[in-house]
Length: 374
Image 1: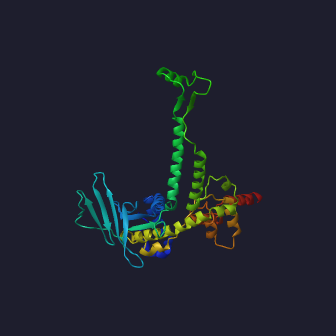
Image 2: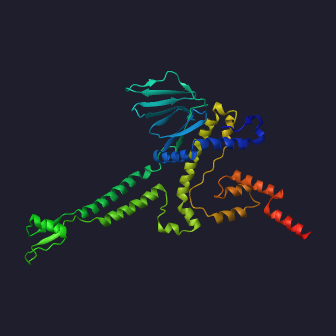
């Protein structure tokens, strides 16, 4: 992780670039995109998830996400609710429970080989200025996004299962034959030939039919349709399989996605809070103070991009119409096709420099025409 000899000696030279390179290295080293996806999934299910920070054997900063069923954070009872301890435990391949308790200075490891907890003799200094963990929450109540409609989902699954059972019942239904006595050979012949031809009276005393229970197909279909509508309504997510959804206009589409957009904004705000603590703790480690300052985490800005269809033509037209009204950076931020605004601005500057230097194809062609005219 070599970003420079000592970038703190010349903070005005390339301050932002040093921070960007450091953050990009840490995220790439820890596959942070995948970690963020798992954190988002866990918070949606449990209402909370945790992230723990450490220094690995190679001396690099490590980040890992943790399931809330195997970890928890202890806060003080003050207004700010500062973290005091972080507890993590797991059961190893040898069926022995192990774990750790972290405070602002040390990590204390324990094991329970015979039901009694045995603590490691000496704690390990983790090197961070604070508890080396962060909690990501879905909301202040720590309620999962699926919990309000969980009972409806269970009822939907139950109704669908009962409907599948009815199909199996009709496939395995019994045949009743009243008014005639059949021998074993007759039953085998009926099963093999799948034809029934019996002698009997013409007065209707003989009956051959399948035993059926009353059909509730209409009731089941109505229940499934109603449950499906309620699940989408309560979860505030539009049904993308709805035929009317795909034919809606642009503004109508935005109204259909309004509740989902509000959920996205709420999750974004909570995620930003967890990410602020993430980088505050990481930047506080003593091993990286030769690369970045402890308070450089406050200079980070996060950009969240919702996974919705984008109209590239409309975005380009809107950005072009803002020329002269907003900065070039703001114009580029409006384009979903631009993943890194800083890199794009750098490319534009390089193209402009090449153009002024006379290395652009258009400029060279003009010079060739001038020589021919001479």
